Amino acid sequence: MGNLKNKVLLIYTGGTIGMVQDADGSLQPFAMERIYDALPLLHRTDYMIDSCQLDKIIDSSNMTPEFWVDIAEIIERRYDDYDGFVVLHGTDTMAYTASALSFMFKNLTKPIVLTGSQLPLGMLRSDGRENIICALEIASCKQVLIPEVTIFFESHLYRGNRSTKVSAENFDAFSSFNYPSLAKAGIKISYKEHLFMPMPTGPLTVRKLFDRRIAVLKLFPGITPEVVRSIVGTPGLQGIVIETFGSGNAPTEHWFIDALQEAISRGIILFNVTQCKAGAVQMRQYQASCDMDRIGVIGGHDITLEAAVTKMMYMLGNYHDDLDKVRNRLGVSIRGEISTNDLDEDI
Ligand code: ASP
Image (cartoon, rainbow, N blue to C red; front, side, top):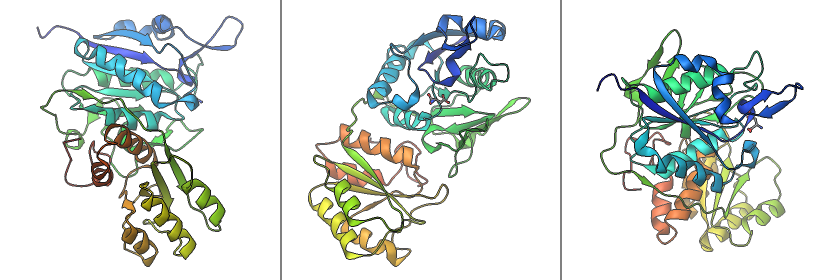
């Protein structure tokens, strides 16, 4: 029994990592069956790898909720057959996909590790090789089980819904400013188990609905009433993530608060997220957030923009008939995306 090899499913979705040099020197997406040609070292692993790919391989700038559902369904269908899953993904929107998957999978007991690279696998100096090999090792690990959706990049394993792409150039392209990394790969991979999500006991549930009718309103000094009103007045809008300054501050001018209040009165849910990479929204710390708190804007605490956007789509998609639930749960942790002591386990 103990000698049975662990099994990992490697899912290729696109992005830079999946490129190899063809005979004429041009970079082409490689067929997943050629993974062993690109990485012959994989023959020597003590786990088994199966691979598959999305019907359509994409640059992750074309990512949509439909693709999130495709990825989730591959994992859901083959959940019992594998010990872990590795998703090869373009770096540009990897943090959004990791966040979305984390919300979709309730009671996840197996690791889902996303990784990619800054240089194509087919290039000599590619960072893809180490990223894939470490991600596979983490997803297949027999001793340590991480019941989370994570991102592995350049020697760090991050909680997916805490991660952000921070560099279009460096190999360490991701960071998690408000939560420590879950593991670090050096000579060996050292895991920080006390930081993992608790192992759930309930049955796995995969919820697949996303409501795209949301917007992000990024504030800047000098933003005009016309711009704010045009976003807020978008027909059919259900929710807005407002990217505010510092600890959640915004202009106190009447036209601004009136525009937000008018949106709330039309049932639009407003979610306050800071533009700062680290730290948290603290409504009422300054007078510049008191009015937003008074009219019912929800504080996002230390959530990332990526997690805020995907959580809002997820909550509106799956709980549209209970908007109070959406309002009550946006600002608290449901998958470890916010630093609050309590984890709401009923979503
Ligand atoms: N544009 C690419 C993508 O996100 C970049 C990358 O893979 O790193 O698909």
